[in-house]
Length: 215
Image (cartoon, rainbow, N blue to C red; front, top):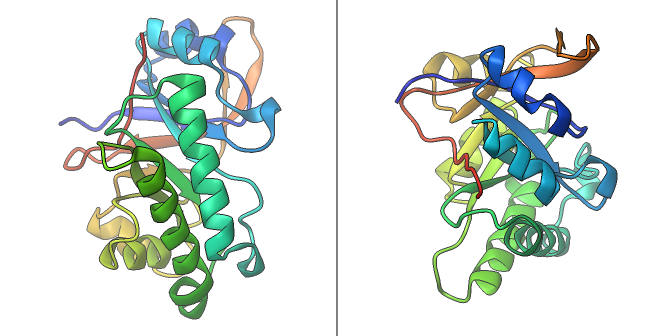
């Protein structure tokens, strides 16, 4: 596998798909959430795929503090994400849904509330797939969070946050244990001469990233 270049954005990219591809972007990361305005839509997924861009998705709502995370929240978010992927987008099974832990959690946070949350996601995925092939669970977060959840088999893939000062992130980046890595925000100019504020990302050439396209 080759390292590929991408970006993540919390806004629709439909009208920019061809321009992004022409600028050397290989994939885009988009959102599932309870906020329809930032979610990937079927029309957008088709436009991105038609332009030759691969797609990745992350579930993120309010995962910026320890008190958000618990097993019941994981069950709810896991079920909602699975249904959006399957019923709204037609995301291919075997691809990944990442779940965001968007702060610098302590080891205790990860071992307790965050692990409980990912246990809930796993249970929700198992229930939704009914024993058939389903989606893979990924985590977006710090190096310590990614490493711990993968070690404990609570996630299969990791997307390392741009916040390199978070616990364990420098070592995780150096070890290239991630499937995806995020870099500091930048702006890119697209075909309507607007500057889009985005976060650059890259895949790891040695690991799959769980990206997909749709027909």
